[in-house]
Length: 319
Image (cartoon, rainbow, N blue to C red; front, side, top):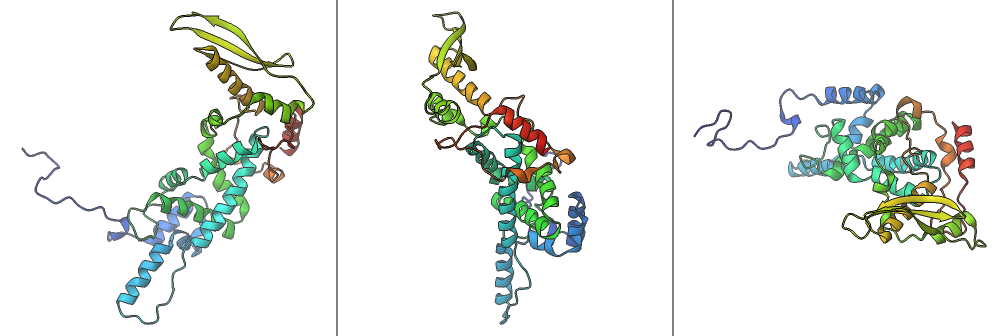
C-alpha cells in the first residue's frame, strides 16, 4: 500500500548540516545571530567566529591539510577554549552574586546548588538551541552533542566579556540563563529533604547560640480521620513559644518531618512570597557587586544567621 509523501523504496536521507546547502551564507547567519542577541557589534569582529569554533573542528581542518600533503600547516583558525574558560568563570561569579542578592537568608550550599543547576549541561544546551547555535557551531560532529552546545554558550558569554564588557555579559546572563529560575521552587533544585539536617542543632549553631538550651517542640495542631487509611495530621514546630513551621502528613512522623522542612524553608527565606527573582531591564542595574561575600554555611558553627530585619534593610539600601 502506498502512502502519500512516503516512499518505501527510497533510501532515508541522511541528516545534513545547514552549511551543506548552496544557499548557506555563514557571514549573514553570524550577522543575524548578533542582532538576535541585540549585540550587533559582535558581527563586526572575528571573535564571534572564534566563539563558535571548537577545538575538534580546528584539529579536523589541520588533519585535512596534512592529508593533502601540506608540509607547513598554518593555524589560521583559533578555537574557543579560552573563551569557554572566561565565560564559565564570569558566569559562576555573577550567578552567585545574582542569587545571593535575591536569596539573602539562604545558606551558601543553596546558592551554589542553584549556580550549578544554571551552569549545567542540560540548561546551557537548551539555551543554545533556543538562540539558534546548532547550525553555527563549527565542530567535528553533526549534530553537535550537548556538551559542545553548552560550551558554545559559555564561549559566547566570554566573547561578550572580552568585546562588550562585563555589563553586557551580565545582561545576557540575566536574560537567557537566570530566567531558568522563573517559576522554580529552589528546594526542588537544592534537595534539602535528602540532607541530614537537625533543626535543633541548626538553631543552636546559627540562631539562638550555643548557650541556649531551648529545643524544638512538635505539637499536633489539627488531625482528622485518626486510625483510618485517610488519616491526616497537621504538626507545628515550636521553639521559644514561636511557630517555626507546620505541615500535614498521613502519619505523625511524616508530618513532623515535613514541618521541620517547612521551618527550614521559612528560616532560609525560600517561601513563595520571599522568592522573587528580577529579570529584564529592572535587573540590569542592581547592586550585585555588594554580594561577592559568601553567605553563611550550614556546617560551620562559627557562622551566624543574619536577622531578617537586617537583610531587608540591606536590600533596600543596595537597590
